[in-house]
Length: 228
Image (cartoon, rainbow, N blue to C red; front, side, top):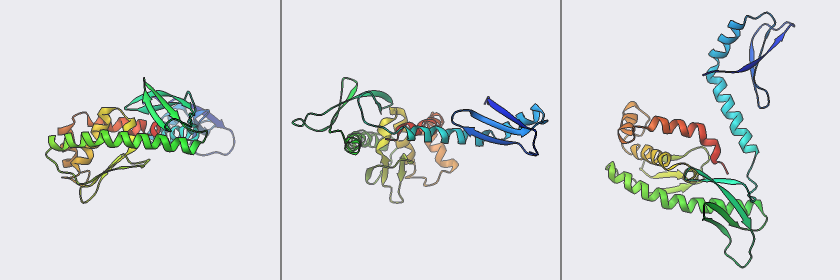
């Protein structure tokens, strides 16, 4: 990983090197004035994991701060693709969201909470239909028998499998690409046999989905995009 940073050298009594991640200025390294460049580079490399996690958190916070207003021109994800929204209000037509001609169409009054409610309801309906079909398919393929299936509003968890083998999936999953959805489904179905994330568990996931590591990485890197 190549890390770009700015160095602030201090002539004061600073004795240590420190890092700061700024949304506007990127990575800033503060160091005593005569600290060798090689020492600063080594310090930054040693902090690479912390830097990556901190930058990711800043990115997530930045996106969350740009909250959806549910106005015409905004884009929303569906099955991995981003589509524009057109908002209108026709009191004598059915209120809610319709996906048509590669666009979202929302008939609703000018009320952010109400508009969000319509979007969440639409996503939950689509998630329920899509995920039920794919759980049924993969459960037959893997010879596994899940219990009940529930669609939730979880923001930080894509799916879960209970001790009784009941499966839960966040409605947000319907915003992700199909292969990512299938990975999460296979992941939770595998927990029917292996409740922990043991080496045996991951071998079984890999047998069913050889590309699972790339899908895990995609979820980690893109999770922040699917918060309404």
